[in-house]
Length: 509
Image 1 (cartoon, one colour):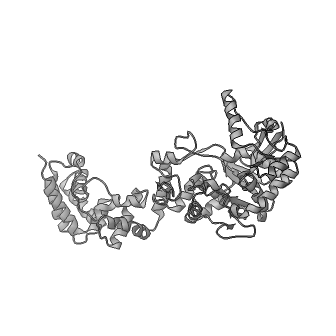
Image 2: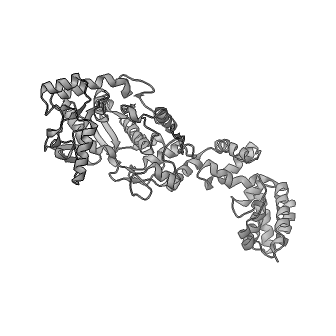
Image 3: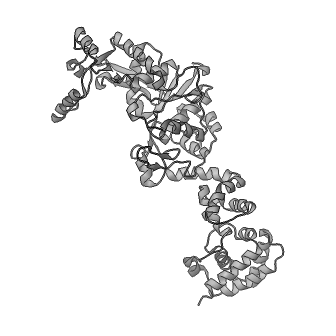
């Protein structure tokens, strides 16, 4: 197959917010298309009207806009293979269901929910599980067992029915998966799946196959949870006589401990998002956090997701979306599930944060600074950000790392005072104040030189002086290079902070 014929799709259902596992599936499809010069399509699979959630479709679209994942065709931009929403394609699916009826590879089933429920209960009482399969269908109310007149009468009386696929008996179905290799399944363990429902809508299985064929999808790259559906889908392609696409089933995203599939409950319990954007449930009003609102850069989020299941074959971990598209291959996607690590996710954001322009970070931080009642000059805030950004994972963390640039200490860390404020500190820091008063060029480099020379001449302990000095300026033993701090807050403010600290802490008895 030539590259120009490579067509992949992401086909979510608008039944709620998009899980990051779905975003990763879309990302891998996008990267595969970009790497191979193919087309990437967004199709909305909204055949299950009972589970439709208002706002979910727009949420999906907005999520990809934030991530920078773009589509070549789809619900937002159209294309030659539309419509790209299954509810708008409804009329065509019946035709394909009828084709399978006519070829004897599907049948009408008139069993009511009550009848099937009773059979299931009978089986359960015998400690068995009922499956509507090639054995059971022989004794149930369907067109395989009813005569033509009975079927016609039921249809004319508008009796509810579904159309089921007629699974072959005891046949070995051989499939190939681009990630897992050769897969074999005996058809006797599979049920006769419903293809068309009594409400006039197709199920996922029929609509998915028909749409993929009509949209000329060449590669179906989807989550591992769809692997059990692969035999049915392969048989449906064969039943229609259509060329099958290549299939690839991606590994699951696992909980941080590796024990099971990552869920919203895990995020709620452990305090991290599992959705790209914040989501408000239209029924309950409950709000679920999103990576965007938690302060993640889109690039960091996408980079992190790409590495959950794929690797470049070397030690590199940081990639732009364009670099990922150049490097990505399905062959380097693993078979086993990938553990989501919240600490690693934050690490990725840190890598992106430290590469951001200081001015941009300062603008992003400005609202938080204002919320804390501080009017900071832009130039001063930019400089402060440059000094502390190596210590932060998120923009929102920056304020806690630089608040002392704009606010004098209101208290002094008791543990630090006990450990670092010596008997000699009061007199030494009083002396240091006079040294600092006499400096005309209050740059970091010059002030450091003068102070260190004074310490050496006095034969004071460097650590003793510098810890006590930091305590008076910052209020605790944190922050970047101390001389960078005092250059930024200025000579007058530095001296006033020393005065305040000497008064507040006083002499050590």
